[in-house]
Image (cartoon, one colour):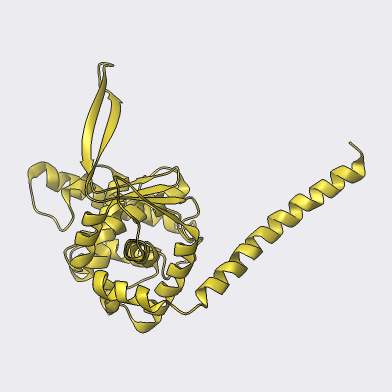
Length: 272
């Protein structure tokens, strides 16, 4: 291949690499400046009462992020569920709450949100300690896959959204997993703003995770769900639910953990 052709091809690749992000951001900026549809606002009023706890500036940011999220992500109904704006807006509000004040690429790995009418069943294949293969069935309210999918039960999503202060919200839980999975697997170590933060994050979350495991082992009560003791990834998702829905209790009982999440999400729910 002549050198001039190679040079031209290389130049085209460079121009695409430089231009594609610029075009994407330009399109997103256009979406963010559009008026927020009145019908969407009515869905938020009816289905996502948490939004009205936010200061006015964050409510506006949330709506702007939702415009982008809803334009870029595919929503797919499962088991006969028909996708409506009510479903899309409710789920988008939770997804965008987690990134409302963070520099974000809008969950770059996420392509699809699959929604079931109610809890759904998944099959798991695993090998036990003596090498025997097993298949089990689990009933779930939500799941996050690193391959670019979030799966939610619509009824469980509604139930989580309806009560704003019980520390249980499946949509927040699964989208927290998506943030965690931006660095690979869900291991409780999401992408932080500065490298210097990782050591403190690891120490604080590692200590709190071990404390929760010990409490669960002896049957002692905790602010956090026992499910958070499963592994560090589930711990991060569980504490994210509590951070948004029970910030006062978290700041009082786990101040160091609250500070880490406040810095990560760039939010202070205590001030709302």
